[in-house]
Image (tube, rainbow, N blue to C red):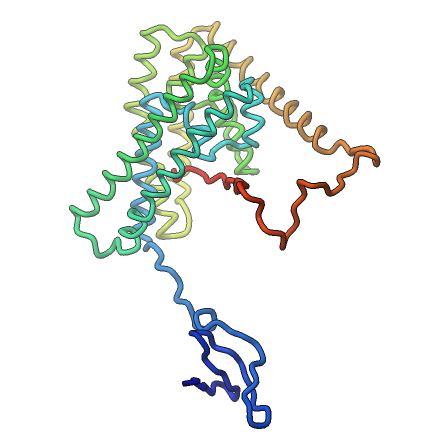
Amino acid sequence: MLEVIHEDGKMYVVIDGQKHEARVAGEHIEVIEPISIADSEQTPPPPQPSEKAEAFMMSTTMDIVYEVEAQGQVTGIRMLDGSLPFDEAVYTTALGLSDEQIALLDAKEVELTERMDAVIPRIEERLNRFDELSPEEVADLGREFRTTVHGFVAESQATFDTVLTPEQKQRALELELVLPSLSSQAFSEDNDDEDLIPLHPTAYEALGMSDEQKAGLTKLQEESGKELKDLMKLGFQHEQEEGKVPPELVSKIKTLKTQIRAKILSVLSEEQRAKLEKICTDWPKKLEQIKADRNAKHEKKKPEDEAWKPDENSWKPGDPVPEGAVPPRVRKPFPF
């Protein structure tokens, strides 16, 4: 039996679960335009995490970042976590990676991203009802997230260490010494922190550290690094609740950063400080040249006789997807 619906002065008929606008034409009903019932109904917005849930995840993420830095696993996640302040190809060029090395790193990234995609729905489901969770369930959620991310980071670092040559690893560590400054410039035009250097000890291995120096930097990370992390958490909490970070807290964070940098420099020898200054001066120029060379290569126009022309391998919207075609991969930032 044909179902007829009247809505908003219009007539619709339902055929095989589809709602179609229709009109009377003599003794017949004529369909004007097919409309899906599912499409015409209002879809409720997906549940969103509460402010408490967001604060919890931010706090947990900051803990993870601190722990990753303390464990010396920072270089292996640079291409995995989306934190580079420039195109990834600039980074791989700066390191001098071959196509084969890039393919190996990309393969591990794809694998880890797919595995993370399988975990995220379980975490999001609990975040969306975070306010209903018991303290034990909240603790379990935090443990699961931290354990998962730490496992992925360890795998990524192991792949990085296996694929790269010693010379390339040295370049990666040198880049760690300049990335804080480049990241600050990329994300904040009014940044007034000068001579930014990393606050974690791993990068300083690029300067040739003795065991005693490494121990000194590790102790500094454990003490002052933890204090800085706690202040950053407090700043995030103020921003969530009040929309801004109190000026006195901003000042306290900047002062602590300055003190940490001074302590780091005091651990270095005069020769190491000179090497650090040279690295922080030379690498930004090298990176800018790499970017300029890449831009010039992409902007170079082809001669008119080399202009693109369709051939047997061409495809256009509306054509069937060729058999065996591999869909493009969308690169996703790692969730921390």
